[in-house]
Image 1 (cartoon, rainbow, N blue to C red):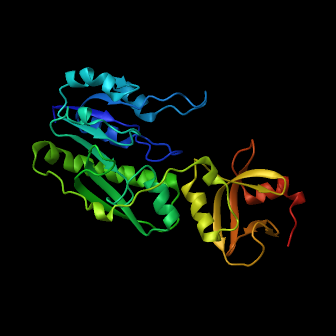
Image 2: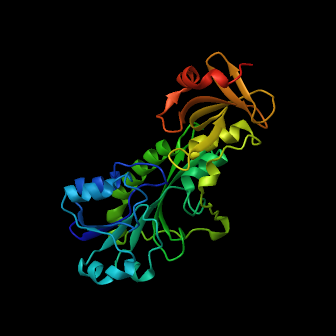
Image 3: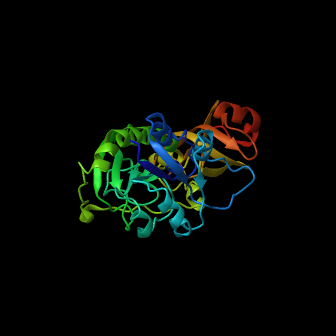
Length: 308
């Protein structure tokens, strides 16, 4: 397609995940005329903040990168590109109607849920936390209201109950990218115009805070296992084992009864009793250290952890 495209977003479908920018890469590989990439302008949280993969890919292909504080600030510049359509993947801010209206074919959004379910900022975390057995990707027409536009295409994705946030993000961004390439020409031509969502069925996901990462042993082990998978990367699942602050990176719920928060240990195995069952710990990161197996943790830190 020769008509210019403007790409919005960083392709990181959730906080704390990385990406290889597959959507932008596929558009470039398919010889689409990506005229500019627009990223949300936000101050660096630290000197060690990860570089945006989308920005690095754009630079590699000499595509201009725009990082406005407000999208309205670059309205004239966007208008000068005469772009037919926009593509948006995890931009992270509401796009004003005045920007959407610049594009004759609108802005096409890859949203990682089966809309109208899981509207909002945390669809990946939410389906893991809910123990859902199905999610998917919606190819949506961006609208003024959050995640409420017409849907051009759906693709379902079956969950097996072992997904981490990163793994699910990788699977869904790849699925969404393929959907986009298969559907975009028909959107631009007007062959498909999208189907309105049923707002009566809409569900909305809440923002996640850093405090959500504190493990509460008064919850069932099954729920805590889901939290470990859903909060991987950020906010991370944190607790104290003995006198050691740790981040739990891999765990499994098993049966057992005991006082919530009490440690269960046998040889090189370690778990924590919960309101229902035991959360067996497989991998973790002690404060200031890298990830290690529970066996390595016990070898180095386990002297004060009582064996049952």
